[in-house]
Length: 140
Image (cartoon, rainbow, N blue to C red; front, side, top):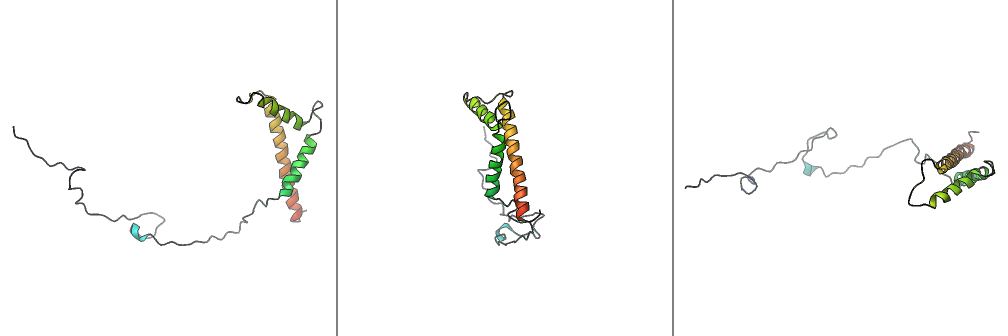
């Protein structure tokens, strides 16, 4: 039996290494010219001018402090069957923490007190920011 010798082109042959190396060209809609990848080493600095103020929120700790006190005072008044909203919220937190690994049930009153308490707090903080900054910038 005669064995036929055939040439197989693959990873083990030297015919792959005979391919000529090509330069990689970067083509993009953002590039204006076709320049080889080795030539793309120049850095440019671009400055953006924008009239939008960087400190657009204009944070002020006075607003947070007065807003928190401004919400804790009225929410601590015992107006809900002799209990306050803050007291009911904190009691429901304690009741839910008593069975910690499991979360509160959907029917738990914790969710009602949490939503009401935080809604009032965020409204108080928002109106406090509007009032405090409006006063300091002489809108009213």
